[in-house]
Image (cartoon, rainbow, N blue to C red):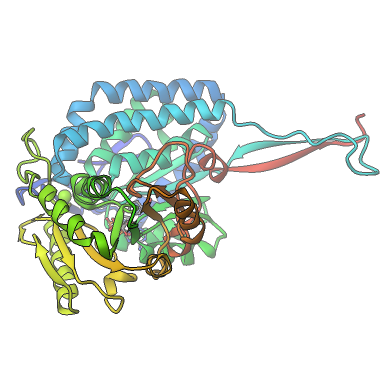
Length: 478
Ligand code: NAP
Ligand code: MG
């Protein structure tokens, strides 16, 4: 596959490439260009001109063009979902659903932008200014760099690109090296839909090599990044030199608290769905630490293990498959070593954990204690259930907050006072009552407390992040 720079499908300037693997089989399925500094800088430079052209197109026409993109994407949905399944190893059914999620996100932003209002100041609110007319307009920032992680390439691309484009910005997109293909394909569809060639730049290559050419470039006006906290901090440091805006959606280690009056079956189902049956647990905001009341621990664990036994691990294209591989063998090995590390620190592996290539059987760890790293900042990005028990609410909240992350949190209780108290006490960007914290809707401002990030993605917030406010004053007009 090629990159798309200024409307031309191209290799990198020095022709170097990277392999893309199918993690389910270990085979190389394609290559991508490994962009050079020159490629990145050219794409960003051209995006400035592209933005002028795109930003000058009236909003309603930009909306029509992006609606064209949605229709073209729908027509090509099977093909793109097939590529996504191959490069990610997730069940085809899940990949196919992503196509509808992407068009849903684009259409929601097209609609939201049409009612994204400026403000008119009350006339005469301040002595001496009563003859002046003051109002605001929102203008695009310019070039928005969209750096996408491997776990939700299409959907997380859409959450960045849709608000940026409808608001009149150019985008420079860098997909993850593990699964860049489906995202790169979308570049050509945006071009076909009518977005000016220079307003959409799709570059590929290793983030650790080319990331700095994006983060340090003064022509980039915002970096919209989703990925790990370590990389987010690195980007933030580099962006600071030019006062480039950043939106950082980072890692998480979300607490899942089952109170003594919680419905165990609901909790088990939600734990299962969010931590294993969706994306093989590779979800930033999903529940990652299971804080279970002592009286319910055995029941919760037994029911969870029975549920995990129903998962069918296998070929992602087989409709019977309900559990895909991890994104790469490397990712599966990392999870395996995190399980081993936690066992070495004293946890008991009571179910699963066996690895075969990029596949891993969901693992249940019992007997967790607060001296173990996983209870704090070791994020396990896959299907692992570390279980710790508590007796009092105070203990539960202390465990819940004992991490520098703060993305999601969830609690299972029938007592609404407890739920509200938890919602107030827990340090997290979203709190879900009687549901897994992998919950995300279009409208909610999604993002993290503490080291889980800066900024909020959502229909009412993302447009603020990709635009800037201009105040206009007509002096002495009244
Ligand atoms: P990652 O290693 O931080 O990579 C994310 C993206 O950044 C990839 O495109 C990567 O490119 C690129 N990158 C790597 N180093 C870079 C650098 N120095 N400068 C600029 N870009 C660089 O994260 P990941 O392993 O793909 O994703 C998993 C992490 O993302 C987890 O921590 C998860 O919790 C978090 N996440 C957060 C959210 C959220 O909304 N808060 C959502 C999903 C995932 P390469 O692939 O080429 O290295
Ligand atoms: Mg891959």
